[in-house]
Amino acid sequence: MAVATPGTAHRFAQVDVFTEHVLLGNALAVVFDADGLSEQRMQAIARWTNLSETCFLLAPTDARADYRVRIFTPDRELPFAGHPTLGSCHAWLEAGGRPRGAEVIQQCGVGLVRVRRDGKRLAFAAPPLKRSGEADAATRAHVARGLRVDESELVAVQWVDNGPGWVAALLRDAQAVLAIEPDYAAMRPLEIGVVGAHAQVSECAFEVRAFIPGLGSPEDPVTGSLNAGLAQWLIGAGLAPPRYVASQGTRLGRAGRVHVERLGDDVWVGGHAVTCVRGEARF
Image (tube, rainbow, N blue to C red; front, side, top):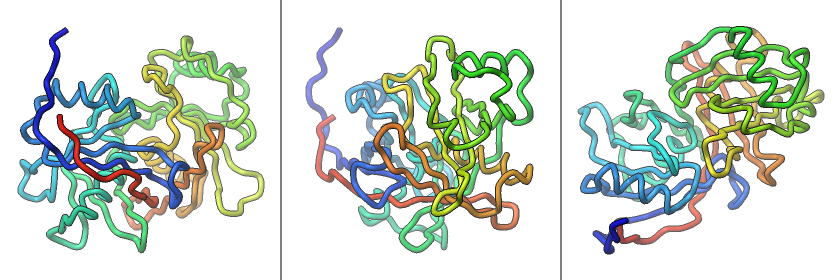
């Protein structure tokens, strides 16, 4: 393997997303001014940070966008992801970025994504689903094996894919979601989201978990893209109110809070973000 020498200095930030309190959300690395980095270099940096996602901010190629982002996991690029969208926007604004209009327009692999400021929170407009509808019998059985549950425990299984490939399972309640001990080998190659309602709604209406067997940390702490797909399904089917908060990351010692709201034809997915690290990195 060739040894790479330190390269150009880049502004760098590490952000905790879907939380107001550091260490309780989902961490994200953000590399600024990344236009000179090759795709191979970006992937190497994402492997090095070893976070669920690392984002690279570039000049937009679409005149309607305020900035462009490329999103990498440690092993591949994603066309879209939710916590990188909010975390990148937070870092861009905090570094002095100024949107051209009332909303921030992010360019990424799925096209243009709108981000609005909702008080201290940011929220993105959920992109259209690339794949939706009820999963077939074979997929349903695959999901049950991966989650180590009997098929009878799956209230519904639905495709909610907006880029990363999510298939989602609705369980009877939040406690059933928290009790899952997944079989990641049996789950492959599916990426499975699980949701269940809390019996007594106080702050949070739903509990969510996200299983990604291809990653080194195969349970994602808090997942914007999954929550976006879940919201489009659950609200559209009348299984969730038009405005609610979901909890995610409980089993991992996190306290992620995802704020969902349908306004007209748009489903907005939002949360707080806090910067934990700010400085310079030589890549």
